[in-house]
Image (cartoon, rainbow, N blue to C red; front, side, top):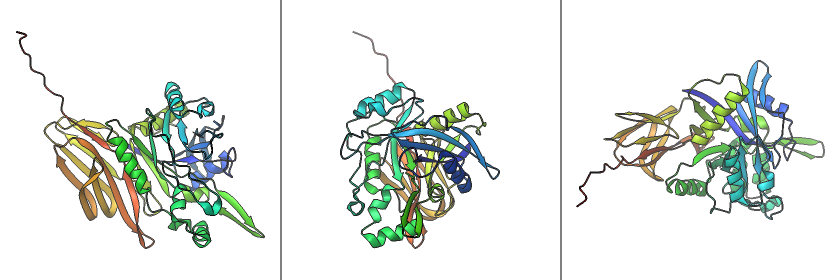
Length: 365
């Protein structure tokens, strides 16, 4: 499998970000990303997709959008949309219809910042996802790098601290978002998870002091998606776009907090006597499934089934379990960084399904 790093949920000057697509691509190259998806608010920017090269490094830029009803107050129910190749903002008034139209257009949809609390200090309202009656969406944004700010800022002092020292901000996905994900997974259908930086690179000035709050390069070196592809990218836009978006939709990725420690090389797999599976895949229980976890470095490791921790290892680089229990299995890993325990890796699930029921033939008498 080929592993690539990708950052998504990025805003440019076409909405409320500060950078051009070229500046964003340059920041991605500096951070060592392989790909990124820019998602401006309610606009699908044309002509910006492709490979960009800076200082001998290449990055693939894709373009989606973050769609929400601008006439609604507060503006809840934000949806990340990828791969439609046509504008979706016109369907924003009805979340279910929007999701349906994305699917009809061959795209994928992810609920953005499912939990996004208010921050009265800056006049920011709660913009959490509200319409949980919807169906048919591809997945959710499990960890939003900007929404987390609202959970740690308690006043002007902490706001200024995180503005100048953003490396202290990330702790992990909001716990309620994790619970919502497990609840959705319990419905029986796959729900893929992605991380979004929600990067804006906000430029602020106070007199002669000029400062960029959370620069693109910071976000791109922090919370990323690591995608597993069957073959390397080819340098062909159409092929590579399809490979990446298909993998994200299938959940063939994990979320890694790379600023704390590099997460490249993490693996979560399953095998039985008939084959093997990776994140996002289904596998039959057969006569037993062996689950294996490999970490790039020593960490705290949790293996969960249907949202409950079933194994917990401390200071380990690997874990294994043989199970005959069908369920939704996923992994969380934690490490200490800057004096605190922080979320490091969150896998997409492996779905262990029951064996087919063998039907017996009976005489009709």
